[in-house]
Structures are given as structure tokens and as C-alpha cells.
Length: 285
Image (cartoon, rainbow, N blue to C red; front, side, top):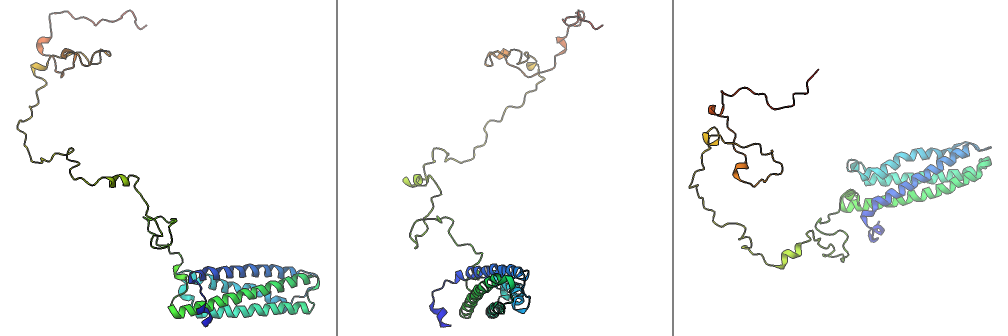
């Protein structure tokens, strides 16, 4: 047990290392499963307990893989990932696969493989590497147990999914050395240097604003609205749009005035009624 304490192991690498080992176990187990089916269909091969045990162990290992690889990685299931239980599961399945390796080797020795002896030998070789991976995961589980006994936490699993605390005001890819100046400040203002060239002058805005803020009431009231129907406003000109090319800045007589209804004296009742001038030759038939 003291060997793990002497080794310089980064606890944050434990979760990914153990996950990679279990994924490799799954791949090897899948290959064993396929080769066992090929062996079952080979001519002259006998199906018995020696080759049936490795085939069945592929299914039996699925719950162990799910528990050992996934339970410690999620916060809700981490309580079920008890370090003592993980050591027991890894050790038990290491023994199981060692027995499957020996069982498949005995199957070959008994010459029960028929025409599929080469496939059976391949299963023996793959089962050997499967045993080695289970021994490796058992060692990782033992280290996890020792770490848990010293720190009361699983190594590296609590840090999964946590973002690194990088100051957003500093560059994450700075080439500065890894010390207190590891992250160089980021200049977010392109004109920041211009602001620091000259000292601050509180009177620099004096020309824009008036310092006299005293209240001054209006001394003269605004002129009252004049009656548009007054006689003085009865004079009005033609439409301002009558002359499109007229001078908009001409005399006051060409400018529009406020409209007022015509007075009674503007009408001449003595004149005969006349039709307005128009082309009356065009009649409807």
C-alpha cells in the first residue's frame, strides 16, 4: 500500500485512465463474443462449459463495466461508487476472466475445437489481455481507495465538468511564463493609451457646458395666438405649389398665408352666372 503513496500520480488523471481501461475491456470482450459464435459454428467443435464460460462472461461483465466506468463520474451516482465496492468488483472480475482464460485453454487442450482451433487460440490470447486490463483496473481501484482514506474524496472525480477559473480579463493563451504573470492582461480598449497620455483635466469640458445654472423666468410672455378669421388675414395667395420653379425665398406676397373664409363683400350678386371655362365640344353620346 505504501507503493502508491511513493508514486507521483496526478489524481486528476485517474478518472480518464480508468475509463480508457474499461473501454478497452469492452472492445476485447466484444471480440471474444464474436469469435465464440464463430467457434460454435465451426465443424467438429463441441459446445461445452469450457467455451461457454468465456461466452457467458461477456454478458456478465456488462453490469460491472457500467458500474465501474460510469457510477463515479456523475454526481448523482457517485454515492454508489464506494471505493471498497469498486476494489471488490474489479478483483472479482479479474479472477473471472482469469478462469475464462484457463477454461478456453483447456478447451483447446482437449481438442474439442474441431476445425476452429485457430479461432479458439485467438480467444485464449484475447482473454489473456482481458485479464491484464482487469488487473490494471484493480490497481487503479486500490489507489482510489487509498486516496479516499486519506482525503475522504475520490481522486479527480469531483473536478469532472468544472470549468477552469481563468480570469476573463486575461489572455488564456499567453506566452508568458507559468507564474503569477502567466496570463497577460488583455487590452480591451484600442484607445486606452490615448487616455493615459495626458492627465485628466476637470475643466476640459468647460467650453461645452455653462456653469451658470440659476433659474431665470421668462420676462416676456409669448404672443397670444392670433385669430385666423381676423380681417387682417383674409388676404391669401395662391397655392404654394402653383409655381414649381418659383423662388421659395421671394417676396412676402408670393408666400402662403393663413387661409380664412371669404367675407360677404367679396361676392358680387349683380354679375350674371357664368360657367367656368372649359372645352364643351366634347360631349357624351
